[in-house]
Length: 377
Image 1 (cartoon, rainbow, N blue to C red):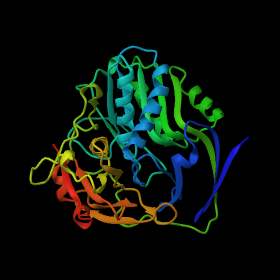
Image 2: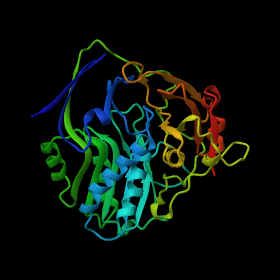
Image 3: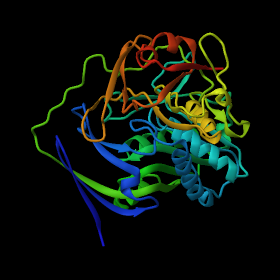
Image 4: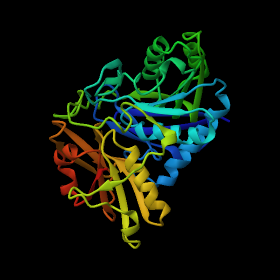
């Protein structure tokens, strides 16, 4: 029996057909409206920790399920390179890499695409056509990682719709990795039909593509023509020149080293989850691409018995309504643009975590929401 869902949005009707699912659609997704004329609808994950606050254990469960599906298909030797797509899949990709390391005898290296400029050589860039901020940069990793030995690459995004983003990454990596044999397209949801997957595989005859997801299906959007959103002013659409770190994933990290999520207040005092109040409810907030280390901190809190949710700020403008119950807009002077925080729980103490001092100083949101603030050690 075909599993079909019809969702009414201000811009039109979204029809979802589910083919296969490790988790039910209603546990994985809800749907909203982008403030973006390029694509007016939005698939909103309930387990990604971006637009909707969620339990760290739910995020971890998705990493485990995806890694368990990947590992049996990895036949080659040598290091495995896992790459997350910024900004929504930076924590997802790192979590999959971490779980894959637990299952694999191979060393697993993780990196992610970025919209931040570094004083490093650029390997290549790609364009995410439907995004309001289309450019992604991948930096050279040769000094950190033996690219010439890689036979398996795992590309991780929160969703695959047209496949254009992961196709560009596959094309670029195939040119740079002489021993590449297997490429995994990994996502929470994948909207490519079997026929589309076959056509994509035909375009890469020298490698084997593996499609790994928690849910596969198809969708159709019928635009009603009455909804024409424009991008808001000062939206972050360009590559950012803000000062940033190169040890959180942009230049890669080895997952077998066990990354440490230690944060201190701007005054230099260590934030120890063991010293937080057990009777308080918390929400930990990551910032932009910097989500994996804040997630690990929230997960540590959860393991110590604290009531905690996790979410992150975003550069994507989404309209209130439906699952978007609230929207905080704030000028981030470090980026010179407006960023957003959606669905902030009013009954929880916020802990907002930054990757460095400069990004903390340039952001006004932590003061606006009276958050306990931490900077990565």
